[in-house]
Amino acid sequence: MLTEPDEFNLVKKLAEFNEVILRAKNELAPHFISRYLFELSTLTNAYYAHVKILKSEENIKNARILLLHKTLETLKKGMDLIGMPFLERM
Image (tube, rainbow, N blue to C red):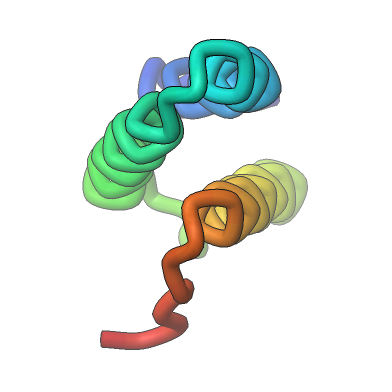
């Protein structure tokens, strides 16, 4: 259903989250989480800029919104783990 390269990149990055957390824990290196969050944010920005989300067919639109929701959850969890507040708006 989701076939855009930016979607694949975002899903792939989301799948790395648990591995990054374990690596940061095992190596006592929280900067791994910070770098991951920066990379995830960069991919999300590219995805949002290149892919039409709300103007897609209904089932594709729903899948894309779900992908962005999962991304938001992951960003919030990561920010919480490194002790930074998550800004809902800037």
